[in-house]
Image: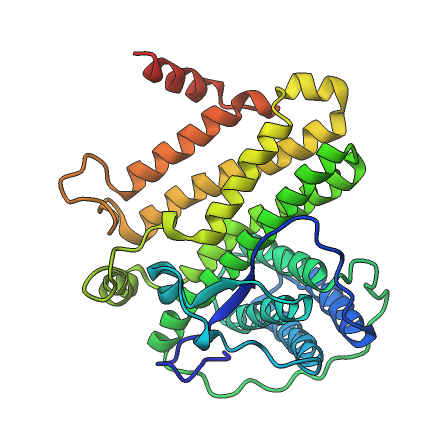
Amino acid sequence: MGLSPVAGHPPVAVFREPRAGRPVPALGPRVAAEAGRAARVLAGVATHARPVERTAALREAAVVAGELVAALTALAPPVAGEEVPAESTSQSYFRVREVELSDQQAALHGALVVHRGLEDLCEAPLSGADLALEVAGMRQAVLDLTGAGSAVPDSLPPVDVPEPGAGAPLERVWNARWLIGHQVHVLFNVCAAVAVAEATRQLRRGDVEAALGRLADATAYVRGFPAAMNHASTIPADHYMAEIRRTMAPPSTDIPLSGRQHRGYKLFRAAMKDLLTAVPDSFEQLAARDQELAEARGALLEADIVDAERHVTLAYAMVHLRRSIAQRPEGPDNAVAELRLMRHRRAAQYAPLILFGDHYIADAVAALRHS
């Protein structure tokens, strides 16, 4: 599973500061070929096959991702994440860092996250639907980070997949999975922030065709958000409550961990806000001017709402009716109720911007604001 020597945890994943306007990476023919092969294999993963066939497909994808890591490492070894100071308790706990990186380092660290994620998915009992979404996000990350969008081969040489070795104790696998899945989630957050920011930049420049492509890329990442979170959570709820949840609050951490502390996600939310500043029109207004753009923006916003909805159901599965560790014991809401309110606010905001908006909730939220 690519664990580091630090108590069986995955290595620290280092991500590049999200920013639009960077040139397409050019990392040489070997990287382009391996990235194209990885993209092709990821696109063909049999997400809904029987367990044996599905696992074999994931092992093949993990091997190919490992070859991409090797090609990138041949250019330069990865920045040692352990040596990069954490900027928050959240970064320290989830073993992620965000700094300025070269194209090669950004691609290498992204490929390492994909590789570890695929290795874990070989055993994680993730649903076929979520597996399809997570693998699609991984594929898009490989293409974006390596610049291999036009290098995907039509045919592939056979892949030599070694037999799996002895597995680690399940409890150790579960603890590592919690971090590995979250690192994939951060990868998707950062890549989505870039894609949304780039789409907005292209819209302001008047290049709608380029913006449509980046909106589609962003949607693939956002659809992968809940899939990656479910991947992290394919552990028994009892184990989460007994062994993991307590490590995310004092005295194990300086402060209780909260989703609000994830910098990559905050940057994604800022990018979404800027997009809607650039294109604030209602769905009907935008569709009258550009139907394709209205639908592309709508697909992204729908994925964002569904992410919020699935966070509600995931929290219920893991903590039931308990408060989150970041909530005050005397507060009026529990974790599920707070997440549901976040969903409602998002759905209300997006109601006029999508084809099938939740106008009932939008009207209710508006009434509450004016009461």
